Length: 127
Image (cartoon, rainbow, N blue to C red):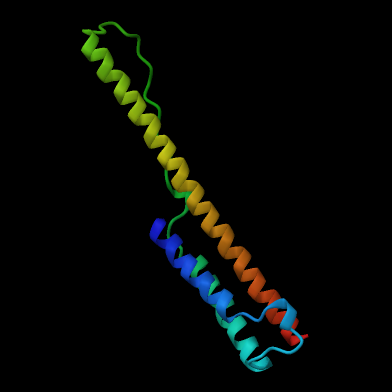
């Protein structure tokens, strides 16, 4: 997900560089045809990114919680410490999974937003 996020950043940088600013919609510096072509190309690029984004937030199964059993033999103090470290490791993995899911969700929302902006600029140029 991190690599795909970097690809998205590069695509956004290209859009920022090539899209006509809203203040120049009436008279694009490179001409209307070129501005419409670039807006359409960037919109289809964002759409292709969204269509081929193979990481889906819901595809990751949430970890199943193990069944709770009564503690019948706790063992030594060292055994209890080891059990505590396993519990903290599970919490850390759950936090990492939450961050990963948030990254995926943010990237997909960003792509949808950028695609919509490219479409709006294209429609403003054609109007």
